[in-house]
Length: 307
Picture 1: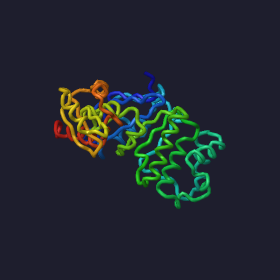
Picture 2: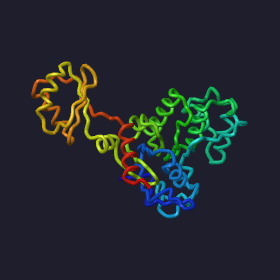
Picture 3: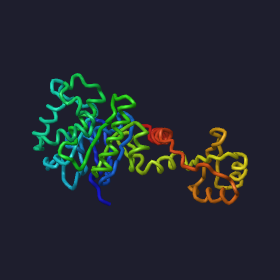
Picture 4: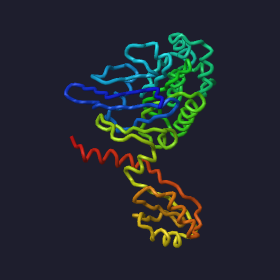
């Protein structure tokens, strides 16, 4: 598999406290990878090491096959948005981007492109000090996109934004990855991001990776295989399911929906069985309660590793 970012056995210690304990992360080329974890788990430290802002005690970091601590030209191909962008309020949006473009050696024609991409063209001559938090966040993303980077690294890109702006930024990240083939590594605590954007998920807790996989893997590992089934005849549906030894639980959701917990992932077999029994199924899908699965992952690790 082709990776844009490779992190291997990363360690970082501050004083007597280990912040990172041998974590490894791979970001697939052209994909969106999410790094999840509660506050203080090591997410931002990991990001700052990856972009070369702080040194690890030991471990390996590669971006596009280069060492970020030795090859600073690499960052012409990397865009980075920090957790809380601190942009100079005395600049207008256009002035900031023109200054950044000159620093990166990028054509000024890029400024118009990125302003249009993040939908800030209409306020390009407005002072940043008068921007809302959502506008500042989008401007920071525009700055990171100057020069058409191959990799985009976002640390909590929705910090302080309202739901509508969050949705717009989410759509922007999806578009950047899909249309331009940019590899994205993002930290977040918003499960909707994971559900809608991320193909690959890492959960970090107390400086250790406690889970890696897809969103489906996260749910199945910590909640089991839970299927939502919709039918107009729930009684017939329940009778048919009750005969199966790989069903461990049935829970009513509403008048036409139930949630079925399976001892093992036999979703295809279950659907075929219901059809063979003449049960009319309106919908059949895996329950993706990512919030609950994430909570279980962190809670379980906390109980198993209390120190």
